[in-house]
Length: 173
Image (cartoon, rainbow, N blue to C red; front, side, top):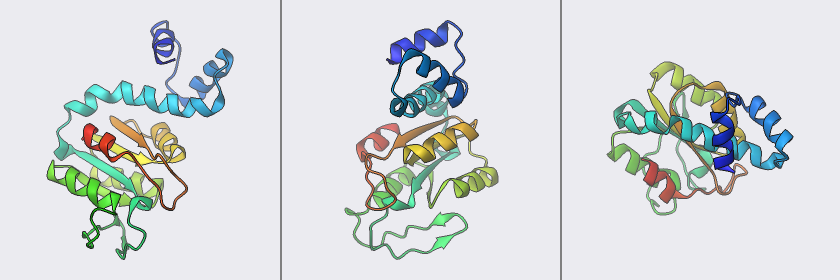
């Protein structure tokens, strides 16, 4: 499917918006549940070189608050949850990702949703972002941001006890 999409793009199809992509894919008979994932993949591919060439010190990693350990006691601030490594490091996916990303020079924010992400981006003006979220949040961000970035979908969403392939995030970092 990805090759087909790349060929269609090379022929001049407009996939600059999710709406344009949905129209074309419906015409081709693609199942609606696959459209958002393909949109994310196309955007990731489009921004891959710019994202990779940007130094980590100019990048921000956004993690959803639902990746925190279920008994996390941190407080919400205007920049999200401030992880202080409360003790159970292996159980907290947010801490594991945050500590690795920060060791590489990234700024990391653990946020409750997209509106806070937009505020942080406006204030800090990163050159690239890595976002981890459910598909709904990813698509919303990708439609509203024109910053080189990479999105990673949660493997289990639902705002509680979520999961993500940490190895995929570490590979991208």
